[in-house]
Length: 197
Image (cartoon, rainbow, N blue to C red):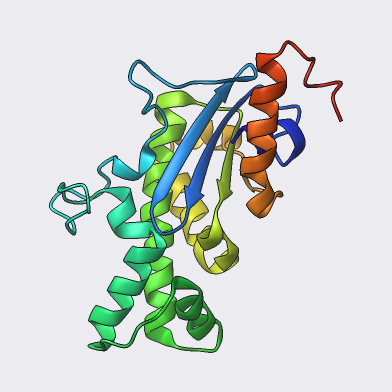
C-alpha cells in the first residue's frame, strides 16, 4: 500500500485502501500519508471480513470470509470442486482457462469478482477512501475479475454515492513492497519522502 501511495497508482491521493489479492487477501489503509495499523496492528485485514454468511470455511476457522471466496486459493478450490478434479492448478491457470473459453473457469472467476465487489462496497461504506486499489497476483486476471467486482460494488452502493467510487489496479507489481519499506525507512530517519528519489 505504501509503495503504491508513494510511487504508484495512488500517488497524490490522500486516502487510499488497497486490496492485495493473492493466495490469501490482505489490505492496507493510508490516511494522509500514514499507514493505519489499528490498536493491535491488524487494520486493513479485509480478507477476514465476512461477505457471505455460512459461506465456505476459511483457513481462519470462520465461514464466508472474503479470502475464502475471492483469493487465488478459493478460485482454484472452487474450480476443482466444480470440475470434480484433483489435478494441481494455480489461479493463473484457471484464469488462462477462462480466457480460452472454459465456461466453468469463467464462472468461478466471475463469482470471485462478485465476492470481491461485496468487500469493496463494505470498505467504501466503512472507510470512504478517495481511491480503492487492487493489487497482487490475482488482480492480473484483469477484466475477468475486476468488471464483476466493480459491477457488484456499484450495485451495493446507493446511487447518489456511486460517483465517489474510484477503483484502480496497482502499478508497481512485486516492487510495491520494497518501495513501501523504503518509504517507511526514509520517514523513520526524518527524510522528506516526497523529495527522496
